[in-house]
Image: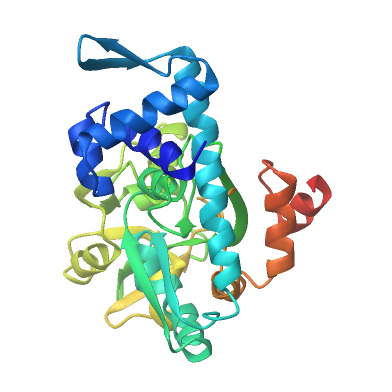
Length: 321
């Protein structure tokens, strides 16, 4: 059994059982792939791929199980190579971070600045998406680290670490009557037009649920998924908004005033996510610690090694491990 045989089998599965496409990806020929897979079947003594004439139609039950383990073997080989090369290239490379527009625009700027000072020869690639997309990217290995709130379903090969809370505030134009109230109520907010986040986003969902629970229907002028657009339309006098405090730069924003909204809307939790089974370069764990200082490289690896699946604080996950 060879690694090349395992690569051929996995790539054929990745390409929907299309040997021609798999051959192009692996830079080899169709007959070579067919020969290696048949040799693997002969060695294992089972049929891995179901054929109808010359065409592959499906995986056998044994084939699906073998592919699952083959992928683990190939991942382990990749991790071994990375570990072996760590001393030679410990301060060079790329870290791919999947995150939301809000966190890339506001929460991560200082973290990237600090990281760039520590590792000037490591490139940071920010990939922006929804919470569900980010979890999927981490699971598939398309990004190294995810930073976002969590979707309803987190892939089982993804480990999560509590990063920081995301608090919310109410923003208004200067001189707005809401600014006279220390703790405005939902009834007070409903008297004014609202610039709202998309309901698919955590803040949009939190606002919708709070008003629905109170039996109040707010007057929504505009919905958007972009914090900067929310602020732009509030400045233009088209309404007030509930927004994440991190989006109010330096605690203030030109043309805007804010009022704490923690008594109306619970904070969300931002999480760091990584795959359980991939090798993390030293600079990747350092990036994680810059974002969330409670997670040292040793702590991250201990939780990953233990296969901890609990959500919670760093202390809670340490107990789980």
